[in-house]
Length: 363
Ligand SMILES: *Cc1c(COP(=O)(O)O)cnc(C)c1O
Image (cartoon, rainbow, N blue to C red; front, side):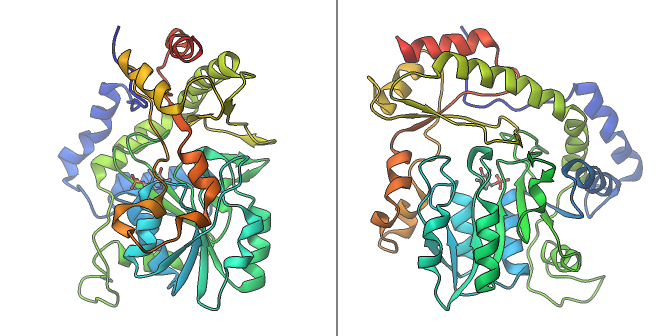
């Protein structure tokens, strides 16, 4: 039997991509907001149902440059139960991440614990829609308004999600989406920032292009974070198939739920009420189950099935930040990170494979 990795990138038909990039051989416009880039911004604005989007070379740089564009200072409240990128983006901007614990229900930021962490140095909150579970955005908005803070969501897991009729990319001041190859929707590498204030567009375009404006003005200190035409072309192709991909993920997701739901000691993700989900991940928390998380991981690996401890370790435990943070301040994040295993989930994962994975976990 073939290996099963935790994720497998979706690909458009080969011919479709070749057809899409044919223009590049004719116009020789390979990067710098060419026609593919322009088209993708337009199509994503429509699909994500947002007023503004700016594309980047990857999601991480979208977040780093969003922080820069908003001119954040001092301290930023965030959670450690996330991918390295969220915390690194804050630290690389010379800011101090202040870690708020997560709630034990959906692992997003615990909104009851935010206000205690606010000081006169706090300039923003950067919460994460972990596994596509949406943060309590109404409470976060209230707190942000009360203390005059910016809110930038790490929405890397939340592509295409809607809460009722509300598109996830319209929450807060801005939302970062990752279009990395392992994500639900991808451009190989890539990312996008959606935001409400349209005057940010010029600033973001400068920041991702060496701080340049036009040909010979350099008003800002910037970097190079442009999305290329070849990447945008992949994005155009994948966007045509995205609804189909999400529907296929749902089939595998539901099968896991059927097989593993109601088992003592295995806690599964609950899709929130009125949320149109994207089925990006299948996290299972082994808490009081007959096998530990690490035993399950090993057993699956012996059968060529590779699950992932996502997220472990939590970011405030990273060696890079040794001695900087009090890990005891986020006990729930630590507890969950020691018990969570993200099971394989991708559009082409068959229900037979899901059954095989579940059988190994149950027996
Ligand atoms: C993938 C991811 C990122 C970074 O995105 P890239 O496009 O890989 O740079 C940031 N935050 C979270 C939570 C992610 O999962």
